[in-house]
Image (cartoon, rainbow, N blue to C red; front, side):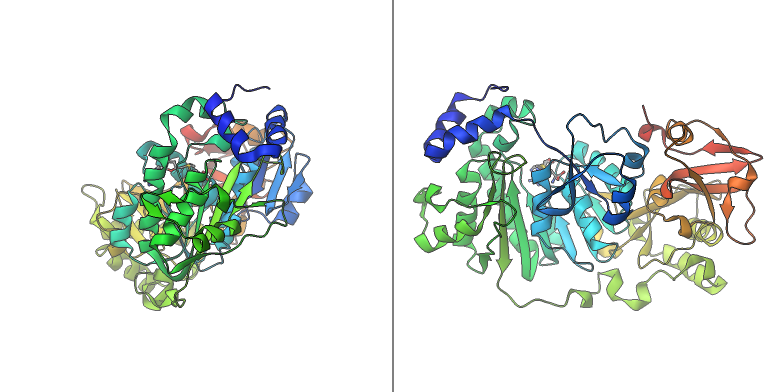
Length: 514
Ligand SMILES: C[S@@+](CC[C@H](N)C(=O)[O-])C[C@H]1O[C@@H](n2cnc3c(N)ncnc32)[C@H](O)[C@@H]1O
């Protein structure tokens, strides 16, 4: 066997699996599977299939997911830097699929970093509705925020909070919640040997304590009739069927929605639940429900070990679009439509709104209204976007947010929305995330680079490029001089500034190709 598995783990799996154990064990001699998931915020799957640089094989449970050969390096292609795909372990694509997200939903990803499920959910929302994406680890939320930005998500709020504090601000607010729970990670032993070393540290008992708290709090965040998807990447029954049966015992307004076994998923194993959990006797009818959960076994599917439960609240669905705190529900709160077509009256209205903006954290000495005005003027000159979102000032930066300011008061907010830029010396500097989320027809000046020559990589390395004026594609009446949206084969990468035949590079230092 390629990996050294802990004996206690092997003993338990042998007892649980009986005749199946040999087949389970032999899966550790097989190669691990590498997956990519197409980011439908930037490209449709059909289009990606026409330009893919790698051979792809569909992942049965995710329409946007594909296996790539384990020797391929998908992170080393300009399309990765354009956010056209996310590199994700294939089984890890299943929870967001099970959540069945629709445009307009209010989704909470409670344990989100580094953002695999969140970027998948954002693709399903297609910019409509809200994604609140959270992680308790301050360090890990940095990677989460970066991924939200790389993948061009416009309607996400990134938090670094405890679930309890989010619940105080958002009681029964979300109609879909995903809990990709911290767990003992047994399902990842083949993919990541470090998980074996971590196994002792993250004992099953410690994990169940966290999972119990997170699930209980999630119930108080869910709107009536809503859905929670709970997932782990471990085999331990205590963290899976056991945790779900305990939740059902304490929350009789929830039931398990049985998962389809069509894609090769196996059913949950009620017979593995102990008769008593946390001192309580689990009735047989509750145990039986967990047969509707899903287990992804490495000896049965092409992916690592996972567990999934879909939990539906039995209340009447509420019309979430009628809530005042949701910007999309309130015509008068919307940012004005296509920015190029805005009247002066619109622009001064945005400026006035700045006085009411979140946390009122404008840059020292800069009038907040002025800051919003510089954004508005920039947008007017450089962009053609229609936005449903509210303009907010936060930490001296300008954001467009799907939530009203009151909803985020007092929460550790990493990003209150789509970061569009900041103002320096009275001039607006567009943010990198503004560029990554733009389509070429939303920018007044565009420079397209080809993935087949060296220019794209040179741009991604931060080099200045020599570019003749004729290559700057621009809207009628727009001069070639100024901020240019740089694209690769038509997909946005970042900003550059063109002047006299040279493109100054604005690709951020921390993002560069190395
Ligand atoms: C399995 S990982 C999440 C992976 C992520 N969903 C993805 O798809 O990229 C679990 C995460 O839960 C976070 N976490 C642990 N305890 C938490 C808690 N009480 N509340 C919120 N997040 C928590 C960890 O920091 C970790 O990032």
